[in-house]
Image (cartoon, rainbow, N blue to C red):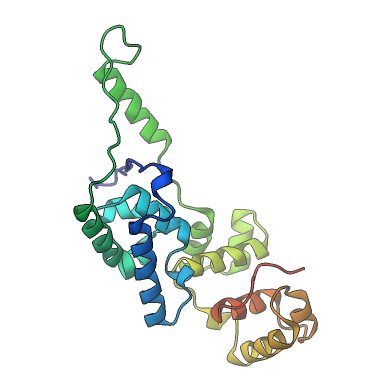
Length: 235
């Protein structure tokens, strides 16, 4: 990266038929399972299958390329990125990668723009396609800056429940959230006890069996922390 200029990484994609059950995809899943077992986490918390499929399709070979994969942020890269890059690199060396034809600069009469014009068009496309920070991470950044969730909601013209969901999503992707300021150990114990009785398919039965002072957000946090149910379904 030069100064503050962002670089857009475009990776050749392997044909879709080669992806779902490829040996590389299976190797990545095996590594994910090992990490999850070691850390006592559900595998999807490491990386979801969709992210592993993109890794198998694009075969990133360095940090910059890995960060271009959907679902791989800086924090997750620092935690797991090198291990997955090693698997991809070893697999790529052991097997011949599928060839993806490169577009050739147009010659006169070919209908394609000359190299200089093509470069200008590519630069323009890259500027227009410059990635934006996902909305849930914008909320997380504001939270990290010390703002209250209510203040973030007002500033971003979003509902409070949307900001709460943004924090949960960021945490699921590996970003740090201090849940202690939203949920006490006593509340968490009561929520888990209620969830054991009412089930975790819906939040309302859990909420109805708890004191009114315990919010839906607190319930969602408790379920998320303990990897229980679909914490976003209130009804």
